[in-house]
Image (cartoon, rainbow, N blue to C red; front, side, top):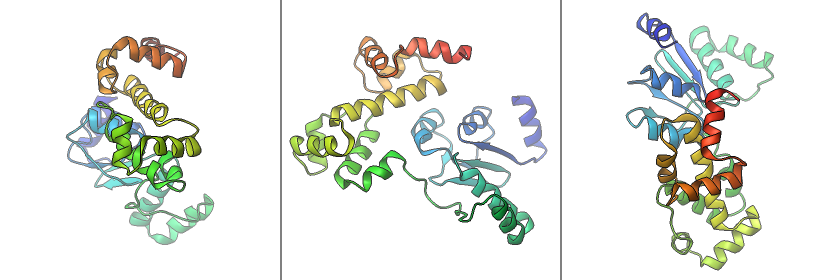
Length: 230
């Protein structure tokens, strides 16, 4: 596949990817020097694996003959934008109507933040806390320090988290770190020990115990299953 795509790229063929497909293009070197987009959940992982690439905070990116979209309905917006640019807005509108897609988003619209977007409607304090948590995966902050950063006492922070998420701040923080670890297991070549360090667990055994409690199998077993296609 690498040879085939590289040959197409040398001949100027437009190449596109949706969601995790951008990881493949990046691994093949086909996004070097291009802006690209991935799903917001995968953005931190993508930047960790490919720090030299330019990742845009948009739902899709068309940079010369490279097209990448965040996934979900974003590819529809990307293709309609491409049609409009190459064949006119009338055809793009007709395609949009055929797809029952009546609100085409522009490429520079920022990505919806999923869980965090929903939380932000409930509590600005939680939204800010989640942002801080996601920025401190490898070096988790004590809950007391996290509370200070959002202007609450630890007890107040726990109260609002329980109210809006039915979890304590510590439980929610651990969930974020474990989900990041799962993405690293599936999409990186890091060892289990390296992943445990990258997600803020002090020992591989502690990481494995927490991971098994959350996902019902150890990190090692999950990686083996993923590699075997099970």
